[in-house]
Image (cartoon, rainbow, N blue to C red; front, side, top):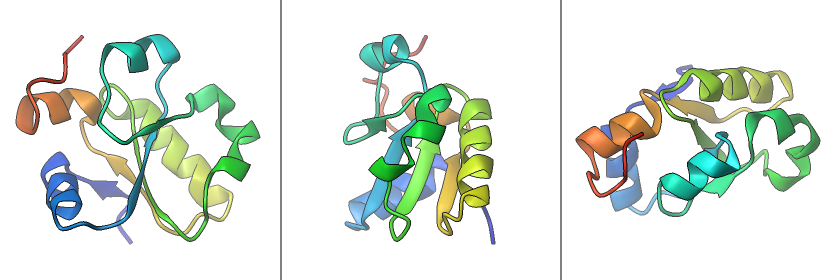
Length: 106
């Protein structure tokens, strides 16, 4: 099973109306600067104490700035028994470049 998704794949899935939970694992100051519409902020450091906010039956796509923290989040969630989680390759940086240039880059 692949634990990654590209920004183009995510956009296509969103456009098709697929139910995807977008998990932003960056810090609040980063989220206030730029975010993908519809995402939920749970900073990586708070994730272990926030598992009750996530549905194990949902498809979860985690993202951060460039994909490193969200890769850690995906690994952690898989260990916690979440079967359907993916890391957004390139993070919000790639989203801004390839999908929505109105999302500020930083």
